[in-house]
Image (cartoon, rainbow, N blue to C red; front, side, top):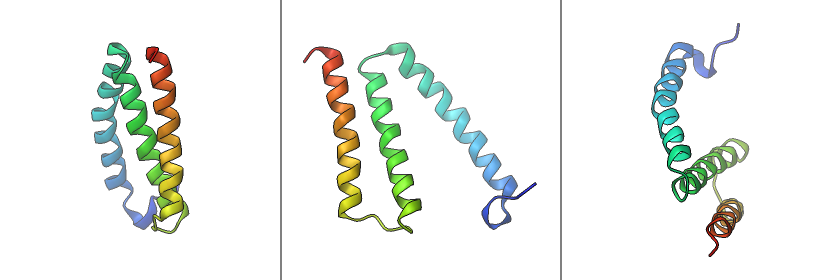
Length: 87
């Protein structure tokens, strides 16, 4: 079995468990209450995933092109959410 980066397997596992204990109830609440909370939760999750992906693939740098990618993703989510509400 391999350890996490830097040999901190137990530390990263504890962090993942704690974040899951916090994020799962928030996700379930967003689904339960529906619009607009679900759209807001999806936008926040997409922004966080985009930032993480760009940070990992860009060697820790976040430039103008990366900001454009993040803006397009958030814009697509906003357009989908607005269409859902009939605006």
